[in-house]
Amino acid sequence: MRKFQTRNWGRRIIYSKWAVAVLIVLVLLLLRSVILTWQRERLAGDGLTEVREQVAALEVRKEQLAADLALLETERGVEERIRRQFAVAKEGEKVMTVVLPDRPADSAAPSAILPWWQPLLDLFD
Image 1: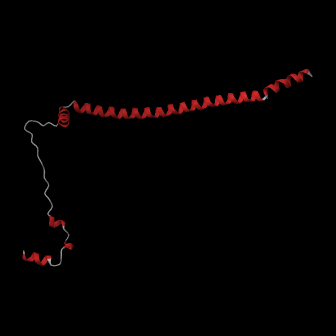
Image 2: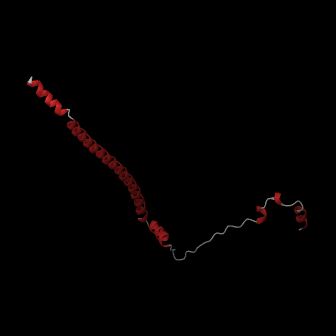
């Protein structure tokens, strides 16, 4: 009989309100740590995406700089860069200004707007 009473005593302790409360607290603490770990992993994934975008942008910049460097290795490229950056010209070069002719005002006006007697007056001019 003593044997059965000893087993009941252990079950009473395990199923007591205090033991259940302690187990609930432990589960909540473990759940909190899982959530924090998940948030850190998500932030690290976002950071990885940003770093990959920055690397891609830097690769494009590297290609642009390599092209500029290749251009600057030629005499024509150096001259073009100097002209663009400092707005200078060679000795003897001049500026040419191209002016487009204006359209005549008469051709811009449609003939439907002219009054009916205007063609008669044009005959006398």
